[in-house]
Image 1: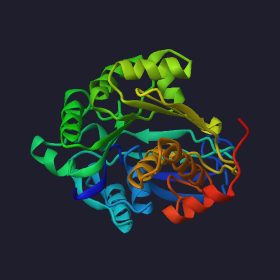
Image 2 (image 1 turned 180 degrees about the vertical axis):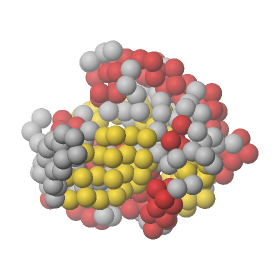
Image 3 (image 1 turned 45 degrees about the vertical axis):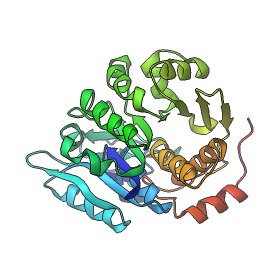
Length: 315
C-alpha cells in the first residue's frame, strides 16, 4: 500500500482563543491569554496526528480559494502530509471556525460550513485514495455532497481493497442516521462520541447503542466518553472500557478526532484492541493539554512515554 493512513472528509481552519469567559456586549472587549491557529476537523486533526505518530498520510477533502485554505494546506504539508488529495473549490469558502475555549476546556464555536459540504471524491480517484492500510472517513453528517451513496461507494471500494476502515461522525440528531447507516456495512470501527451515539439512537446504555450500530453493519464500536475514558465492543464479543488519564485540561477541541488517529496507529503497530484504545486515549489526553487540535501530541515515542508515567482516573 502507498499510504498508512488516508483521512477523508472534514478539514477546517480554526482560530482559537483562551480563556473566554464571556462575550462582551456591543463593541466591548474581553482580554484573553492565548490565541492560536490550527487545522482541525474530524479528518484534518486525524491526518495531522497520524503523521505525528509516524504514519504516511494522505489528506482528502476540499478547501476554498482564500487565505484560510492556503494556510491550512500549507500547515498540513508542514507535517509531511501528502495534500494532493485536497481539492480547491471555486466560489466556496474554506470550512472555518472561531473557537471560544473556556477555562474548563469546553469550547463553543462559530462555524462556517464551507467546502466540507461541497467536495466530492470522483470515482476515478477511488483506487488512489484507497491505496492505504487504514481508510478513515471523518465528518459523516457534515459532508453534504458526499454523504449517503457517495460515501458508501468509496467505503465499499476501500473494504474491497482490504483496507481497515474507520468512521467518525458529526451528528446531532436521528436525522443524521441515514447518512451514517449508509457506510456502516463497510465500517470496521465506528468511533463516535457517546453524545453522538445517543443523538443518533435515542438510547443511553452503551451496550445497547453498540448493538444498534453493529446490527446495521459496523464490525466494532468505540465510544469516546470524555473524562470517563472510552468504551469498546465488537462482533466477536470483546467488550472493555479504558479509563481516562489524569491531566490538567486546557482545550478539548479535537479530542475525539485525535483518538481516531491514535487508535489507527495502535493497530498498525501491532497492538491489541485494548492497547490501541489506550494509545488513542493517551493521544486524546495529550491533545487536551494544549490549545487547538493536536497541539499536545508530539510523536509516538512521546505518547508511549506519557502512557507509562501518567496515572489514570479511578473507574
